Image (cartoon, rainbow, N blue to C red; front, side, top):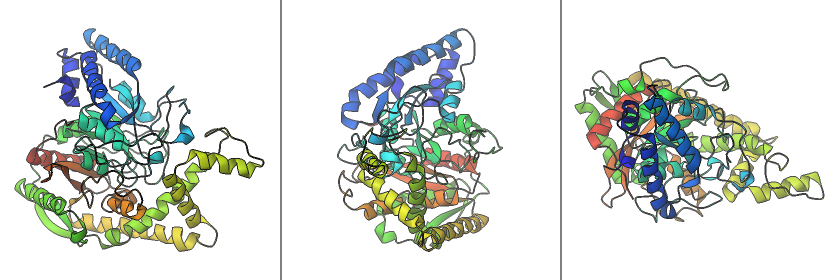
Length: 485
């Protein structure tokens, strides 16, 4: 096994014990990145010199008998909406192409304190608005399993990089499925934590009430190890809070689901969902049954019937407000019109891509006088109904199983001119964001055509450890993903 194939938890063990050198692991990952990046195009920036310095520092600490941290020597990539001090943060947009962050995101500080080596930034849909990473202002990213297909989005660069073996661990952000859907498309695992479990300080906002940072990895142990590091309350984020419980890395050792009640989602239009994805959801429920869980059917009629419409009012409305700051004064192209209004128009027309403009206009309309109650107010009432629906369902079950997407990875350009069809790929993921509950996609093998399959798990608010424990059971049943490309 090459060093770039080793999971993060084994790298950390080896560096701490002295059996591995962080520099050797990093160099193996950088060689892998260099050999494949011309085809996959997952990265926007790679910090070669800085990463080597960080790896050397970790090795020195280990050699001197100090504990470098639980992620000692683990190479990590970050989605390019997570700020790194002194480095550009573009959000995949021309609007921020030259912007240099003056501070580190909280998750970056926590990763470095834990001994991780930050390797660089990954490509993404512009301002996290998209499901294919085709909306990046710089270039599209390819799926390592089939270069003609999309990696999913908006965290497609992070997913593709982990799947291809650039790094064992990456961070993404999830507003409506942007960690879970690309993880499913690229054949890895991806976790959207409970809203508030991971600090959003230093994450460039898309929709503040929905956004959440989370890990992506090829090994469930790596997700657990990362959550033990980044899942902390942060005074810099008023929405973050403490969630007491055992270490994530400890709960994944449990092979039994005895006493847990697992619900398998029914009541959606199964004719519109790929049959193999429906099949692996049923297989996952069987594996849970074999592990001692009780399994029953459940329905989410409000979430599956009105969730998509509610989300695509609330998220664009929040985006319209959050992105109002990009006006050319502090951020954006330096252009000057004859009037202030003309300057704003020129800056935003040049700086934003088509999908971002579309969503800003949708959100502005939903918030406009005379339409606020009709659209935004109604969408918020639906959101509260979805939260209540999840609360009721989780009184009868402890975990929920469903597909992560209606489809397998699709061809580049296949949905580019049909935004509604693209939005429908989020139908199974966005309810968890609206409800604020944790959700996880788990690799579930390959389709008949060799494309990745996955299953999605959801748990009650704050029960992320239960979710990861069940994910580890399914990983052992389906088999862990391996490096591709």
